Image (cartoon, rainbow, N blue to C red; front, side, top):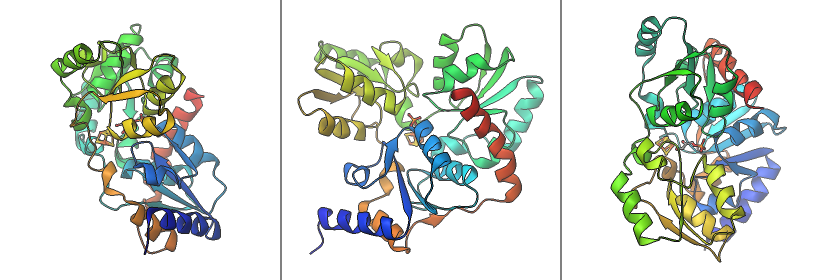
Length: 306
Ligand code: 13P
Ligand code: SF4
């Protein structure tokens, strides 16, 4: 009979035999993180993809993450762990809408959250992730920035970089943006000794109540390194389980029971098993011109984010 452990052992054996690097976003389930070579936030995954030596890279996450890996490693075979795992935010602005926005804001530098399609990135000047956005926006020469598509992350950046004129558009993560201010206030009342840690994809009014706002890895590191012992977690709820494994003596409470990314949850350990067997996932194939033009803004992100 197969068990989680026997399947994990099979995956570890097969990934070595087939020279596969497994990257897993921190929102993947614990059983998947345990077989990955690297787990972390979008920026960390991009860095790993850039320096990988393996012939095949399996991205356990969502489509824009696998596309970023393919763009950074065009000669490698890149697999997305589940063909239906997309990010709804990545599809919120079409290429025609961005072209129109660029006409409305001529001379603006277009900064795209990495949660965008590769096609859209071809029209952008620079990409950012939640952990690199403030640093990158600060370093841009232009004062005028058009920030797409997450207005919550954009507002959080704008607050920290007041010297820039940041134009926001209407977009965001349905899971994080569903967390309300009253939920944040209630959670703080219920757990007065707990620190509130949130992802900047949350509403600005929620982020402003937090003790810390930052990327997935930022939240994990904050909780691990803190001398506090209780935390309210305002991001995808899988992070609570990962933190419980990492810090079993600390307490973690969800800010909202509904902050769940259904797309990140599509990939199962069995999908990963099928991928390393050579029978699962989807190989990412992008048109050469899209890869070439989208790469410019990803390379600029890596250069300015360093
Ligand atoms: P991170 O940059 O923190 O990994 O965020 C990516 C994401 O999709 C969060 O919802
Ligand atoms: Fe996209 Fe939100 Fe899921 Fe992140 S949590 S992948 S932004 S839908």
